[in-house]
Image (cartoon, rainbow, N blue to C red):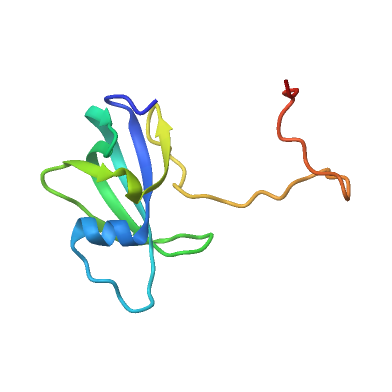
Length: 123
């Protein structure tokens, strides 16, 4: 899935990005970080993801996650250590809507009955 040329949004740990960018950590301030770019020709390896980074966004924590700062790197092709990556989103083309996570309340739940997440039947 993380093959060459795929457009991706990769969410990384605060500590990992601060190491990557060479930033000192403020005493209590934490951020959410998103790397936006394309998977490079080497793709995903045992040690990380080769990424052509278009931009890096430092975001506030919380649901809103507003962009605080935008960063760029040169050269743009970088190996992102696998232990820095929290999650990745793959797109055919970058979405026009805001890049974020949002909470969606579960609807139609019966009290005391867990939600059904799949129609699959256990083997």
